[in-house]
Length: 590
Ligand code: ARG
Image (cartoon, rainbow, N blue to C red; front, side):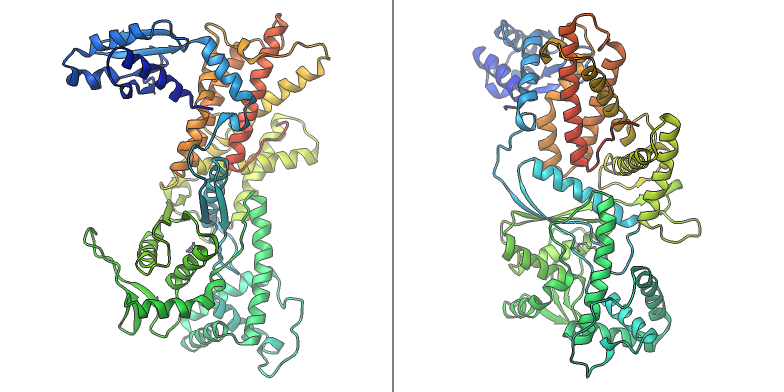
């Protein structure tokens, strides 16, 4: 379907033309003064100079040309030349009705279908997910869903941190603790055992122990470096042990992401591009793009327009080992070869911006990424705890994501139990759904690039700009629909248009919904889930005003009730679509 606002612009554009002015002047905006009108056109002001006429006169001519338009119920001209517009009931009603029976509420992707690779999540093997992993997961997931809904092909890759020094550290610590393991026997040629020699909890305890020791014990650190190198060079036993670390860790990560409704198409990691590195490096050397500086292989990336001096990108460390830049560069090459994407999107902490500037510039300079491949850094801000300080546990440790979610779930459980007497199992499930909604909405409703404070009381409130408020509104609609269904069979067919009526608060709900397609397009282009939140919140507010001021089931005119029910169904569908895009869902009762 054509965008609602586009139709309005075409109509005013024709009027401008009819009055002898360019159609482009017919641009229409949502009114900044909703008390005066619903939409406004300021085009008379922009062409006044060129036509040497008072804007007011032009506006009056255009208003006259709009007379009889089926789109508007009222066209008025206000000094110095604004054209104020109200939408006719017939046009608004039929547009929304068409939306209600169209796929995706009439949204169509008018451009080309893009192929996007999305790099989000970014967890590290053998380290539990902590609060810092929340944002890349949920923002990335939402942008992925929005992009797909908007008509594009998206490949989501978790890009595991599975190849650096931490791997060597874990191996070193395991060797100290269990030297008898067959993985450390270099003369062993048989098959390695299927069972991993540790559990996830052991692994999670081993890593911090090892990395702590590396900081104080030089000998130990040397061993860890040597083990990292031996692993990367392909020592059989170490590779097999590393496989086990990966196996145990990935199973645990999947479990945790699953709880959050976050999933990935690819579970690739830094290690997967290891074999591409030598070829990549040779090519950079041969092309004269990389050079040796203080023993390391570097690429200069500074550009004249830079405001501050940017350090070169280190492609290989002085000991010849790969680093974070190396694997990211080779991964770009891999993605280019396998997916020829239109763009690669990175949802990563904004504090890593310099790293990505270096990597992107190097990738372009070295031709690892195609000339037209967009490399996009979507840097998100920090999620802070109360008082604006980084989120920590009571004793100052890193807060696990699992713990954060389960705390919020307990809180939601209390609230739900207070509110409604639900069977235990349903109360549990509902608490989990609302907790996920509270956390995700609390995060996604902020512009991603900004820091924000994780305010548990605010996020879990049933009132205000929150996830639970949205769910509560959906549950309210579900309950009305269920009661209506239970009322028996001889009901008239609902015509949504009949829900519109002069002075009815339903009108605002209709107007909100007309903006759906434009909202989707903006959310996609700006990679901005907060647009979806703002849309859903406005719709929820206007819907609740309508609900409070309107008799729905007790309305005497059954045709009207049926029309309201049609409206409720559409609003619920639209909320379901929005929550799906944000990555959570509503329970049936709460
Ligand atoms: N594992 C990284 C970290 O913990 C994040 C990875 C982000 N993605 C990337 N392609 N570099 O910092």
